[in-house]
Length: 197
Image (cartoon, rainbow, N blue to C red; front, side, top):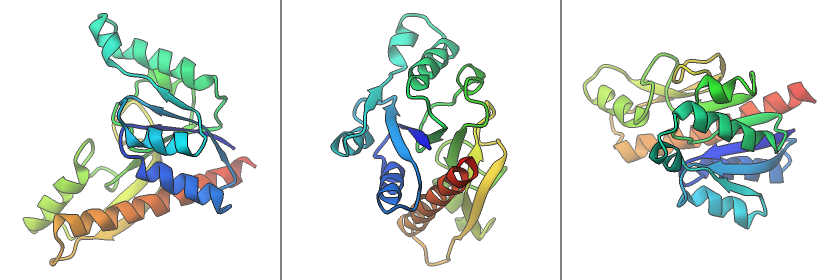
């Protein structure tokens, strides 16, 4: 299975995927890592592992008066070159429109650090922690789902609950969430790899 991984940041989820492939837990290869941020450390991780990288910023499009849809269509064309079986949004901080998603039907998966219908969008971990501090919830979770134009709303492939303990600092809860993200993303990709083989 050929993967293309889209990132915007440090690439810890990318590293988890790379490690799982190296250990034989996922029968796949990463064809390319794409980032919309030039200084994303995930690009360094990929380059050091000999994986092709691609930087596709949005700013030149907005500066030229082009739409997000035009950016998404061009991004899709660039990704298509790698002939991916699966595209993994691993900390990709850009909402993809149908201009991208329609080119890869049910081939784009996203990781979101919350349960379905809860804390959609950005800063989900912080918002869940704040809700717990107010006594509104005692758990959050992580879901892997198919990406659709609606934010964090596609069909769920896998989910897991993560407790928020009374003694937790935000850092404690974040660490538990990230560990769960890494584990579940690897499991979901391995599951999809088996289905495709």
